[in-house]
View 1 (tube, one colour):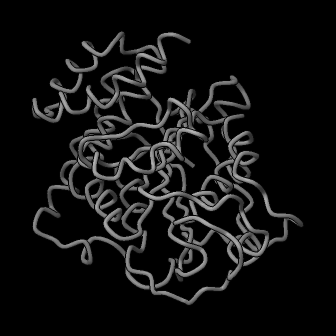
View 2 (cartoon, rainbow, N blue to C red):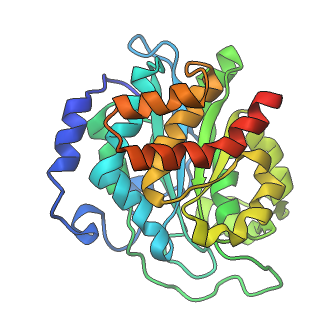
Length: 306
């Protein structure tokens, strides 16, 4: 996937038209859309093309449980065009974006939804808003000894085992995965969950550390905590994402922080002072610019020591 050119103006027009709509008007309702259903999907593909000869895969894996549903709403209503503008202005010319949404595989009717990698404003928006934020409960199908909060590990498992990325296979250039969340995951991907949600039996449960090892083979994974009030989960995620665990000051900064993490990692933005200038040039308010830079400072300090 990932054909077609991107227009910032077209993307702004799409999001601006939703200024007075509710989330229930913007996003799909009910069960998972057939095209977002990962059952039986061999892989989502981020491929090079004549238009995009150096595709950079970027995954947003979004927790949609409870108040975490605010982040996809922010992306669809306002912030995703800024994410793209920052990337393109910094010289990341061929980003391809895939949206995943997840909840709790024990309880939720749609525990995992997966779009396609796309390059145009219209198709990115199509997959994002095809996501259902309003799935119904189905009861606990996985009673047992598992401890945790949401099925983060299932989304990570899909990204690790069911994506094909030309950037890695052709150039050993890893893509970027941004997972949003405010709870802990389960310690392993249960084989029963894989069978029910993805449609095959892996024979054994897959521990989260093993999933992370596979994921890092082709992705640079980041865990985004939306605000300081939910920082209690930071120690858990640092065990798995290390310094790539980012705690924001507000969920509204998700896109600006993610775009700068790509730009700084790729070396197209020199340092945090340059990053702040990039955000200002994109139209970001000064208070949000400073909040984003503060959130990235611990990561940047660790990153520059590597």
